[in-house]
Length: 308
Image 1 (cartoon, rainbow, N blue to C red):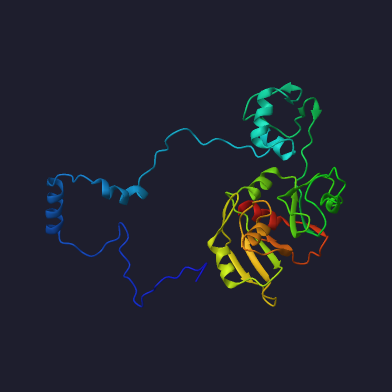
Image 2: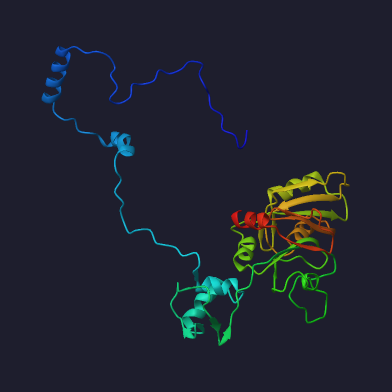
């Protein structure tokens, strides 16, 4: 069983070995003398390398190398501070630091790895940077909104749906196209956003797909074995019919972050996606979250996202 360790036990009991220094029984003087003579006369045996590990627990270990560095939880690297404040990614922040546009307490800092303390004033091009509190907002996106910060064409954006969520400026993690509904995460935590969108971390996503015609079982198998698109092969972790739905409704689980990947997969099989809803993202679900509403993640949920 998962999460459980089983051990086999025997019915009998082992006899306890005598403790060091405990008398095991009377010995004759003759035996003691004979043993002591043999011990003094016998040459010391050389311990083989394979047997040395038996005595490791009883030897005093000698520390090698440099001592462990000390950590101050109140200090933070300058590049991380800039990333947390939403100025740039850590790598981009290193470039800014080296270019001499970052000042700490009105002193230009170009040293990578420089740490700042609480109360330090950090400026970028003469403007003071305030570190914002990290926010994590989950939205159940309705149809008709595009995933962008602003739109020059004046179309409705998802930012209007979360503008009252917090005073900090948050950004969408990934994208959902205009006609796709479902879960969309917003945050000002640049490190977490990068993690969830990077292919290496493989954030799982589950979609409820409704096609324009019944989906065959053969095509479900093709989705799981992999389909080649213009930008590479995409393999679905699972593809099944939705419980209680028709043969046109399919649940698809995948890790790919390619643009419009679900719609393109079904188009490659000869289907048109009529409705597309993301019901799960990185372990987060739509439970108790109506369409068009948002909520803040719990501390437990945030910790899960960072650890997964």
